[in-house]
Length: 252
Length: 60
Image (tube, rainbow over all chains, first blue to last red; front, side):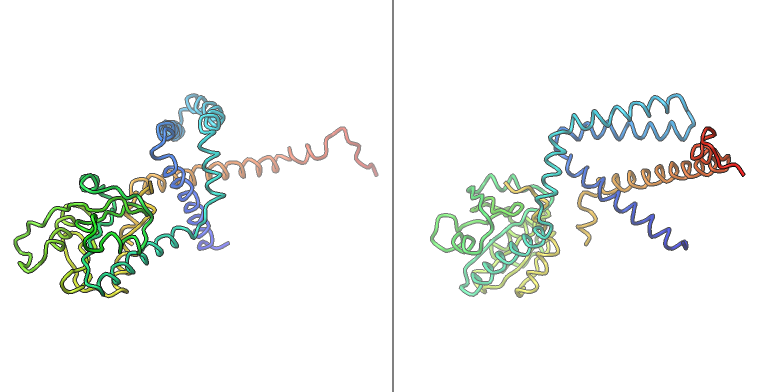
């Protein structure tokens, strides 16, 4: 066996272990199991340290604790293990990509239909930073992202058409939200309130904000305090598919 | 791509460290095990176990 094969095997095995550990840590995050995991990691670290330092007796004690801890682990995590195994069996691995592309498709369809009719739209897509402060100012919707629903919300002379909507995870959280207007003096004076709100929110958070102009029907995206004007459908889809991860947020 | 890396960054780093430590630990244990098996073969303990003395060997 040559060195490259050995190295490839080693890297593959480390990657498998990496994915396994990552899966366990992500699964345990936010549950009571995380504290137990912290304890296990601490004991493991002590075990390795005592082994490296050659403390045979301490190491022997840790070995015995390990043997017991496997049993304790199975008992403590009984429910979590059952839930985890069930979710592995039930998971549709293609679901994530399908879900992402479906939602992006719904958003872009709504944007370009409203753009054709020159109806204004303002959508904030939540990412890492929570948009709770802005969500509170709106009306709760909690519905699946759907182009028909988006069009209905933004149709003029309806109660919720003013303000913006927030998409959190894979759901429309609220509509009629008030977003902060940009205070940047360099922003063009011709820019409307909707675009200013999009810029303002993108300056304060990491949200992706999609705007359709009422006057021109142009589709723009604001990210990190920068506004990109007149996107076509492909560009908007590309931007969203690169930045939007519906799985990162738990759907309600 | 950037988001893929930065998302849960510290959990990724922690799991990578754990994976590397586990791999080297298990590797070391396997090497020890192999060495011990070799030594056992050399000292013909295994052959004695396989052919215990009470078994009658064919006599010429």
